[in-house]
Image 1 (tube, rainbow, N blue to C red):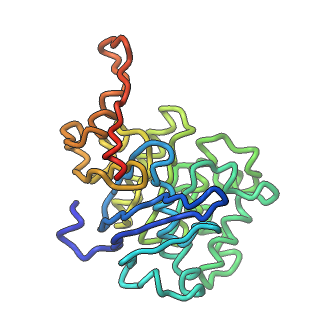
Image 2: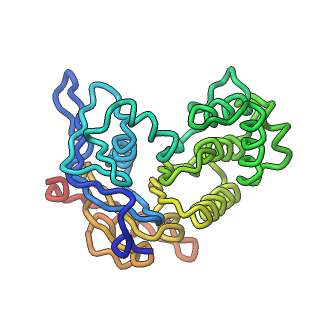
Length: 282
């Protein structure tokens, strides 16, 4: 699905994120522009390329001393740059949500899964506690958790990595958002669990008609799962292309990343090293 044949759900133009530190100014995101429809958009790049900071800036989650500026940052017709804090809080968690990378640090360790899900549900609805409990159990079932009533009584440390990630996905989707930003949701999972989480996300995006921003460093994963890809380097987007065309990328950075992926069918010695051009960061 292309974002060009529909009204964009999200419009970002010239997004910049900078941090004022003692050692000077760090430009984490530099002039990022894209539109998103109800599709799956992958953002790939190395650690420190600005992927996660882009997602956090969209949701207004850039921590101090960070500074966010943009020419345009609009979600479903709402100007995110001029919206009040109250309006941003209403949108965040209700219509826009984000699945963080590691559920161990996103879930409250002293609250049960059920209590956290009910709290998230009732914060954005007028449901009673009983209704919120019922909806929470149904959402856990949607992410393929068997015996959701039992899981709702568990604490985060009692969950496996895969189950914790699915609980986070359920919690972020319980308000039926229009936009989900998933920040490396499968990086700490084994291959079998990765595929299961991706299948769940795929079903939910298709069934609910959401827009998904999938942040990852795994190019093969993005190529097989997303519709379009933004490739970031040093805070900038260096290439935008269809996911199906990732192997035919033209930018030397993207081609270099693809060339560094190990292949089971052949042995390569020595392993390829990415030769960086200073011009890529300009």
